[in-house]
Structure formats: structure tokens, C-alpha cells
Length: 305
Image (cartoon, rainbow, N blue to C red; front, side, top):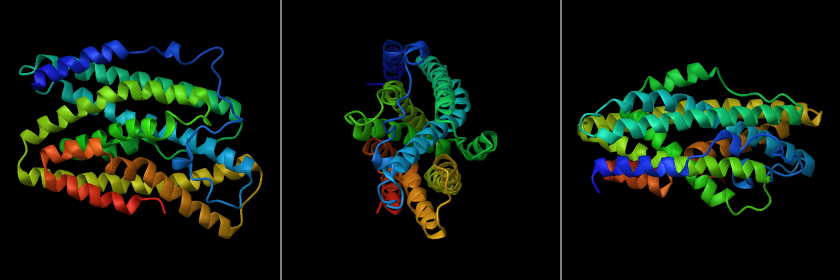
């Protein structure tokens, strides 16, 4: 299948599976705060034995809120990047611009969906939850890297979201149905976006030298290190959010354990699970076997213990 046919096929598929915001939010569609929202795979509340079952549920929901908020932040830098790429090579590949603009429009829709769900969460949860930022500064720092490095980072995040849904959420009957529905519909469109990301990455790589690719993968690791620093801060914010929600301050020893467990959980959720995703690695291998091997090796440092 040629790149032209790929862009056309993915555009047609995206239009076919497209959904509207009113399909997912509104009257009668409320979050059920008696249930967890995020799989334990990512929330990692069970290792924190000093928390009661109700406190673990509160933490799960705090982490779920952060999961949505961090995805919204990610999409804030995906939109301008993909919009810039939409005009690159449009003459040679007529469906490229159309497909990528549709991609950007869907990402904006996802941001609106997440914003609406976050407002609904905050109205019901009743406790302020912190988030790293400012988002503008984070986006600028990531987009300050070369296009090939940013394309690699975005590709990993897109395949990660698909892996999360299929591997940990789809068949989990314990989770709140409304939260699951949101992530299902997000995945339905992200599945097309990930394939488009692969085409963008390959296009950029074809115009790059071996040294350019080596530089890009090093920058990708720099993006990962930057995000990892943010996840450490997010764990600290989640600790404060939890203490506000449960009305007590944890002991210093428990706080240290909380931060260690939750920082590693965030690292795995957004970095490790992306780096070991087989679809992500397959695309990287099509660009450079060495690049894929380096990323797969790096994933080991994020594995949950």
C-alpha cells in the first residue's frame, strides 16, 4: 500500500468512526465515585498498605483525574505539531494535508472532552487536585526539540493510549462505565492517529541522515527525562491532593513510600508502557533497528517493581 493510499484510507476510516461530544457527555452520564476509574496497573494503590480501602479509592480517582489532565496537556502540543506537518509534502501526497488536519481537529475535540470531564470530576469530587504546569511552558519545551524527535515522542504516546485501553481497561469490569466509555471513544480515534503518526515519522526519517536520526533519538530521551521530572512533581501534587481529600497528613515514612511508588507508577504509565509497546517499536525498527533497540532497552528502567 502506497503512502497516498494510506493517508486516504486512514482519513476515510477516521470519518467513519468519528463521534460527537454530545454522544459522551451530558444529562444522565455521570461518574460513579463509588468505583475506581483507573486500572490498578497504573494507579498502584495496593502497595500503599497504610491507606484504607476508601483512601485507596480516593487516590485511584485522583490519579484518574491526573491521567485525563496529562492527556489533555499532551494533546496541547500534538495539535500545533500535526498542524505544521499538514502542509509539509501536501503537493506530493494530496490526502496527507486533509488527513492530518482532520487528525488535529479530532485532538482538539479530545481536549474539549477531557476538559468537560475534568469539570464534572471537580464538581463531584469536592477536593482541589493539583496538576503540573503551566501547560504552555511544558508544550514550548517539548516543541523546542527537532521535528523528528517530537514525532517519535508523539508516536509513542499515541500507541501507548491504545495499549492502555486494550490491555488494561476494555475488559476491566470493576471500573466506572462512564470513565471507560470516555477512554474507549478516545482510543477509537487515537488508533487512526497512531497510524498517521507512523506515516509522518517515516516521511521525516526519509529526509534525515543517519546522524539526524541518532540526534533525534537522543532528543527523544531528553523529552522523556523532562517529562519524568514533571511526573516527580505530579506525584508530590497527588500526595497533597490525597491528604486534602482524606483529611489527614501522612507520616514522613509513609509520605516517602507514597512518592516512590507513585512516581514510578507515573513513569511506567506514560513512559515505560510507551517505550515497550510493540507497535511503537515496530515503526521505530522500520526507521532504524538500532533506534528501536535503544528504546526497548530504556523501557526497562521504568518497569514497576
